[in-house]
Length: 66
Image (cartoon, rainbow, N blue to C red; front, side, top):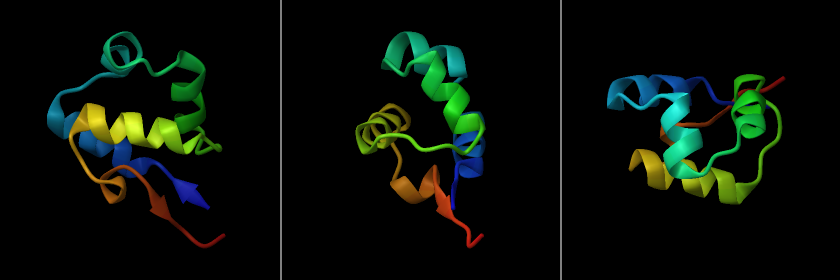
């Protein structure tokens, strides 16, 4: 299972809110909800997040065995 706990830590460290992701980075509010619930998202969304946060994929997502 892919979890996004690191995303929230990275956002906090960089001072970026979910509002900023939605309004300035083009991340849909439904996508933010899915990220919070660790549900599936598209790879282009991962790319947008990495670009917006200026980080690597491993800074926002992590694989955890079920």
